[in-house]
Image (cartoon, rainbow, N blue to C red):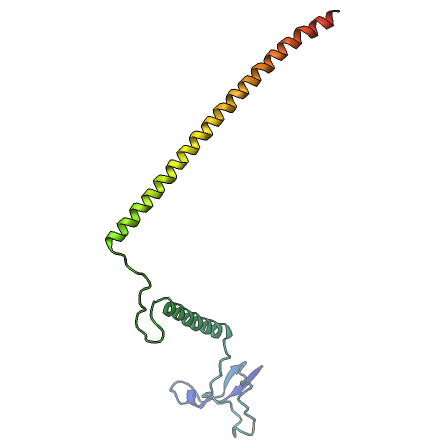
Length: 162
């Protein structure tokens, strides 16, 4: 679709004749609401700018970034250790022990560990003696099984010969 129109701004420049210029595919934006009666010369005005449509992916990304920034700030504020009512740092929840009390605790913990290790050593010795007894019993059973096989085989040979 080709529309002819006179562009007065370009016609005032030297070297451009004030003739009718041909402009291709120039259409009005649907929101402009200009009728032929609005413009007495029937020309489309160059000064009118087309409005850009809303670019939804960019709007979505902007809202998402703002939301993530706010969430991050809330989490940082929550874990920063400040008291919400006063804005001052929260009082430490830890209680400090004197050095003598800590040394007593350390000694009692070491004694507990030594007692547990001694108990484990006793249990290991008991289990190893039980394993030795079971091993001796197994050896005795294997020896008696060998003797029983040895006595059965000559009897079977004698039965086959007869």
